Length: 200
Image 1: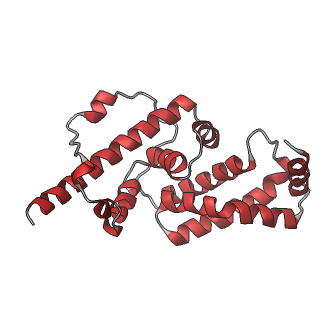
Image 2 (image 1 turned 120 degrees about the vertical axis):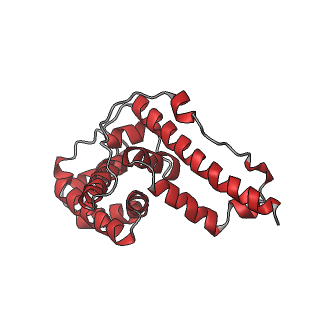
């Protein structure tokens, strides 16, 4: 850690509100997007954002720096988001469930469509994006969180593993499962689009 970062962290741990305001400015966009993708509701995501920074401000004096501040904030936000998920009694799957995975089982009966024949405008249409967002929301919680952090927010496998207190191998398995689920959903969707196009 360089001198500037050390001073900034020391200021944060000392309760410097100006330093904390800069931290919020620099990280709130990422934290909000993660919460929104997990919850699918803007008001819930705003609530998670607020709770994340309240808890972070209270806990900063005890922050030991074992992970980056961003990873630490992600962990707080994800915990807050998952508590809301459970509160709303949405589909819940424990983040600590077993790691067994058989890719062959996941691929059974999966219909894969070649997307090459669809015009680019169709692939990028608002309807397609809404369908993708819905498909992400329909992922089991443990897969959705990993997919959001790794593929949408661009965190590394290591950072995702640290934020979720999982092994890197576990993150890779869940990411693979999430991608397979989404591939199947999108294959069915675009298969229908291709059929519609062929009848025009």
